[in-house]
Length: 357
Image (tube, rainbow, N blue to C red; front, side, top):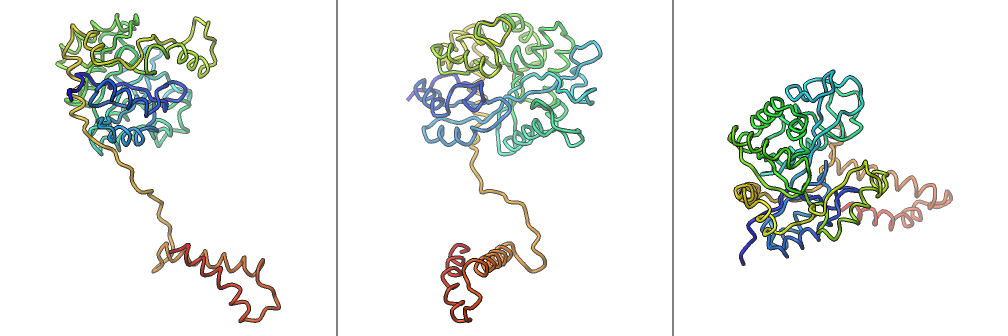
């Protein structure tokens, strides 16, 4: 069976809480229906759906690509503008979380997956020397640079850190930040282009292309999917309003277009007919991320049981002592002789032994 010649690399499942509206099973169904050989799950600041998606997709013959849309904090100078050269280099003046911009990270290997786990944990817990966790999950660029092994990075489109600087007219800063990301992800950074019909995308695309060609960076076409198709746009718009406490009729609120659905390869090829290499690179990235995440047994913390005593020994000793205390207080009468006590306790002890095996 011929496969589609495009792969989605920017999909929000229902695990992008109060934001995504595509259940994992529906994601896989869409891939099968549209004959896509692979698909990436890139929920916002979490990997809640990673294992479910990996198992469901692999079972139906779709290559799962495990990723995340991660918020990168931006530092501000006194004038309030971004400072890409120093992003993450110092501490904010107050604990109030700075604004953040999204990038997309895709795991190529187990090392990359573990780096994703570290970065997401850091986004919620903050750095070791931080007085308390950030109010909104995000990581500084300096932390991102420390955990790059096994990861492919997409720049985040017009809403990403480079795109935001371009929209602000800070061309030199945008170039410096892109160079910094390219150094952190050598051969693994892609300049992300989107065409949802938004003004900021039209304004930044020629600037992105100039930078990409000038710095010899590959481009990639994505469609940020939040719902299965355009028919779900109105319902999804209401979901966003509920999440943000806004009115549907409000003008100053977040809005998405009907183009944020799960487009087919034919639609994406037509949309980027003038930049076929951007679509081709989705297939290249899919080949570079042929990694299947698998569940592992629970990793419990070690327990100090003393010298020459295992955790199993400690469990049995405490369980036996606890059972004996309950037998003495609730089952065994003071006037019972030793034989009666032993006979009465025997089924309880036998059951304990069964439970501990």
